[in-house]
Amino acid sequence: MSVITRFAPSPTGYLHIGGARTALFSWLFARHHGGQFRLRIEDTDRARSTEDAVKKIFEGLQWLGLDWDGEPVFQFARAARHAEAAHQLLSAGKAYPCYASPEELAAMREAAKAQGKPMGYDGRWRDRDPKEAPPGVPPVIRLKAPREGETLVADGVQGEVRVANLQLDDMVLLRADGTPTYMLSVVVDDHDMGVTDVIRGDDHLTNTFRQIQLYRALDWEPPRFAHIPLIHGPDGAKLSKRHGALGVEAYRDLGFLPEAMRNYLLRLGWSHGDEEIISTEQAIAWFDLDAVGRSPSRFDMAKLTNLNAHYLRQAEDTRLVDLIAPILGASELERPRLLAGMEGLKERAKTLVDLAESARIYVERQTPDDKAKKQLEGESLALLGQFLAQARAHDGWSAAHLENQARALAEAKGVKLGQVAQPLRAAVTGRIVSPPIFEVMAILGAEECMARIAQNTAITL
RNA sequence: GUCCCCAUCGUCUAGAGGCCUAGGACACCAGCCUUUCACGUUGGUAACACGGGUUCGAAUCCCGUUGGGGACGCCA
Image (cartoon, rainbow, N blue to C red; front, top):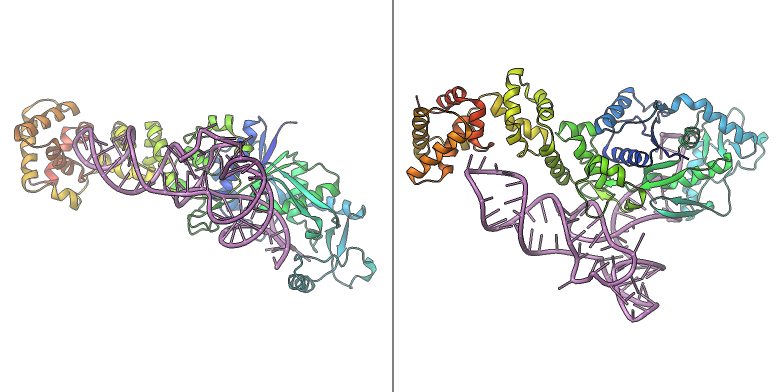
């Protein structure tokens, strides 16, 4: 049977980093095995689900390059089907109505805790005659789960995990208003969608025992499960909005490339020997569950940034110009300069935001900053003047030509090339850091350079 | 409280009993390269949580301790 995986987020917020990795792993697994990767929106919590969140999830996955097969399934639309499964269990005697009130339930939990027993429903309506039901109380429907033996999960990542059935209580299948609970919905949907491999966060591991009991009750074959460890924040605590749990679009806005994100997320919890830089094609070829680690990992911005710098250097110049143009508001006229300068810019940038910032020198004239100003006084300024006088006396404005002249001047004056280049850089770019200055000057052209120098220094030509 | 999972440099990890004086990557420090910065390059600091076993031999297997995490909803 061909592999079918799914990613099943609830649309209560953006697609966060943990969800993104889960989606990536499921996607890679499906692609590796030539199967399907499907998307299901778990929107049964009407109060918390929003359309905006659904949109954000779609956009997040698209940005990451994780394409899904077929149409997304909206879980709420299938509520009737879920309820049908519960009623089927009810008539088969595998489920029963329970009339316990919320207050009773709370009391049960407290009592169980006090006695050192697992917290949960005590099964008081399990074998009770429904005729004893309190009048006017709509019941919930609970699964009549096995009280003996144990339930085993043969997990693709965690190995064999088992728990005594006594630890598990009779879960609610249908709420008092007749709507299905998450546990029921997931099982029915995964079954109906033909999901063969459920890859999800570790936080679902204990749910899995209950879900397997449900599969058994419904006489369905459970899928294979794989629970991947959670991602923690830099402080080791659960990932919260405070540090890493931003939506993927936040990382996009921070200037990260999707391929860098994919590579980073892939290496968080998965490895292939000492490989670090892994293309998506390579990842598809290599990815499998046996190389997924079992321990949680921490989110490390520094490593993501490093990877991003790598992919930035690798990226096509035209693509990068397209990506930074909106940040810069660069007119069509300036695109040729950006394109010409991109080679030199991109190897110095860590993020698209950095890149855009450093690219401003090609887009607009900059007022010298404080450090640049220091290069435009005294001895430095004198050297600059001499360089300009010399440059003006010769024809040609290529990077090589300008550099040769600067070298000649430096040699004649017995100074280092930097002493000529730095004032020049300051006058032309307004900064003390930039791509090679002669290259910058060549791209800008003589006219623009002279205008900037005149504007930024007292030198008149 | 009950149950489940986890544990190698600061971080991500390699390691499936001898190949480990524990390897790589990021970060950090120092040198080199160099018109600045970055890249690149050379070197360095830095880890098997602890305690018991098993074994000729343990980072690797077993048990315990400690420390993290997760789950116990008519949320998903």
